[in-house]
Image 1 (cartoon, helix red, strand yellow):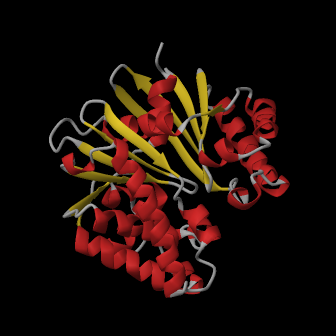
Image 2 (tube, helix red, strand yellow):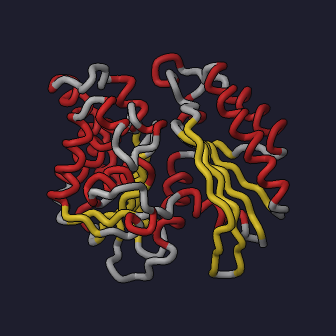
Length: 304
């Protein structure tokens, strides 16, 4: 069955068209656009007209791709920004009009389960239990499990949200970094209430902040998803790469050959979240995955 999966987060909107046959999946088309749907939501509680317009433009393009590739099913999932927005019905109506389906504004727990399924389905059980960390624009999901989710918690510390809250200078001041770290520490305390993180054997990092940190740690000449996928990075290397990105100016980050233009101004906060998790959890290693919630959405779209 050919399916289309759309993941609409706080920072980016992504499309995956895949052929799914039982336990196998073949990717036909992947695409990402940074639309910053969640811009200002943490402060105003609403999706802005400009952000909705950027998202509509991306969706109109995705709808043309879905039609051209003759997808039998389409599933769109919307996450942190739309959960928090007072006017999310405007977003729902816009998606219905453009894409022909309703976006599913999933809970943090549902988001966590989709991320876990997408990231771990091809890993087998070597290295289980896994702690999957999906660092997004508005929230971070931490999910523990082996063959399925054992425990999960979604917390409101994402790269867009923390940048807007705290990291205002270029580069941010020590006080701003400390304030952002305090938010991550508070969020991790909430995670520990329900997720036994001490059981982790493999820490699996997902999404653009983590893959960009991996590219930086590996010193890649360009963004190379094959080199990044399932790379095993010592915690010390990850911490150094995170600190480097956090301390760079925006202009210097923009010059990095693997940096997506839409991530330049928020990667410092994403790196801060990852660095804090690695430190507080006492990790020895980070495994990086290119498979994530988008893959989980595709698998779910093919179910009877």
